Length: 265
Image (tube, rainbow, N blue to C red; front, side, top):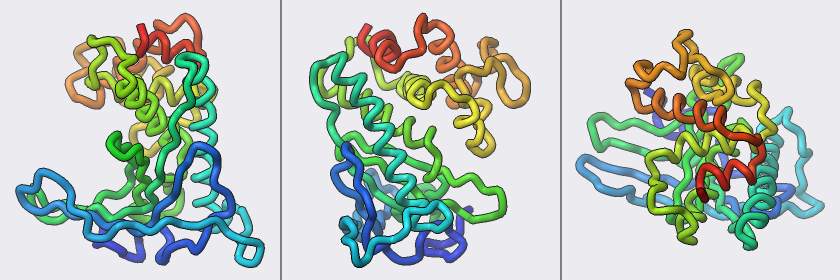
């Protein structure tokens, strides 16, 4: 179980960043400091505290844009998310003739969940909310040596942005009736992989499950072939099998082509 909310062992800034150096095109605003709760039997989250928008820095309070410090890492994550938006925006316009909608970014929210027992806190994760077009990057549960922080990982950024592509096409009613959200995770993995120029190393850095999520690799971490349907006995494994099969069946590893084949067919 992750430590209590606001624990100093969580890897995130202990106080709100005063400003950010650069807000890429494709990001409406960045919020910080939200706190949501879900008590026993709750059917939805309750906003305990709404995060505050982070303004752009001016010359007097601009911080060094360096990944060697935490504020620099935050700027690097924001820049990475903006780059993923730009990649998908190019493909989106070529396929629909329309601009790809921007997203909102929620940094290090506290999600306090006691719906099914003792309170748990969401860490080491990211999510996309289609109702608000918001990507949330959760804190890491610790900062041990060698720890890979998901909120800093380009594949995670690309995966959540791919969900934004899928949801936007669904809202525009561009998706066929046969395309349900059941396969969204698999499609998001494939699109994220292609958006990062099909580089397996950017997926395999994910702790514990990177090999499984690499759609180009035909085996699970335990050596089981992904093509073996009997291996798909769990939801996550089923998604990994489908993602691998989707990628292998694509005649071209191009983001626009993949969106057209996997979503608009």
